Image (cartoon, helix red, strand yellow):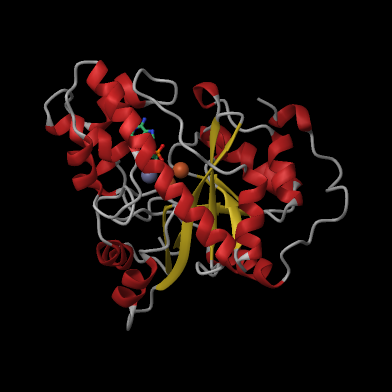
Length: 296
Ligand code: AMP
Ligand code: ZN
Ligand code: FE
Ligand code: FE
């Protein structure tokens, strides 16, 4: 399948494959473009570009930023921004630093639960990557307390689980503004996977993000049912936002293939066009959005 996979992780966050390996997988899948969207860092951009040099594959530089609203996590994808812009760079640095403190708290929770993982080992597993729950889950698996990462999330690490500690995150409107002000476009990641039991994101929040310059919605995600995909495609159309898709590839940590979900080139070009005209919204927002349909 052609198109662009606009959501992949590497060893620069909590994926298990290098940027070069993602490039190789993208070429083998016959993709036209590949985004590297590690959590809270742009460190994979250069290695991905180096690996794709001389091939027909376009690298879309990206990030998946940690946002939250009233304690609920929201992910914002950013593309083509300048990672050296001070406001965004400082915020990403803070997000990464706070992940270490939160990692220590989660390790302490596991220790209280009788699972003796150490923060030293977790930091070794993460390497230079922003420390995330999957690294901690790998340490638990290594100890033999669970068969795989999925079991660790299912028993202890899921949102609200016994070892869960929320992480510091930005509010989603600020997050969109930071990306736009750094010269990029912002896309709401997997809107169907938020809230209790993945009930989804309230349309009011998406509208607020749209007013701040949000460019797209990742309606196509492997963990969205076909109903969810249709719902968020409609929301994107209603708010005049670009519909995107990506695999959210994490290497061995998730059971799916890079390129399994992709964005058609025409949509990527619409997204790119928003770089030149970031806020096409009419004041007051588009009319006719059926709020009832999109509320949690
Ligand atoms: P964090 O950013 O540290 O809160 O970790 C979030 C990451 O954990 C996500 O990007 C996923 O890669 C992973 N994750 C979240 N829920 C699960 C789950 N139920 N099973 C496996 N991985 C998960
Ligand atoms: Zn991840
Ligand atoms: Fe995410
Ligand atoms: Fe992701």
